[in-house]
Image (cartoon, rainbow, N blue to C red):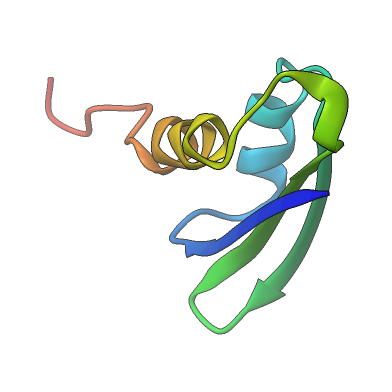
Length: 69
C-alpha cells in the first residue's frame, strides 16, 4: 500500500468536491486546526507511485478561486 498525507488549508467540503474527481485512490480526511488532514492511499498493483499521490495533493492544495480576479 502506498500512502501520502498532508494538512491542506481548505475545508472538508471544499476538498470533497475536488476529490470526487479522483478515481482509484482511497481518501481519508479529518479537520485539524486551521486545515484538513488528507491521506491518500493506493494499492501496490494500481500502477500509481508515491510521486503520483503527491501530485494529487499538490493539485488539491492549489487555490481554486481568485478572490480579486
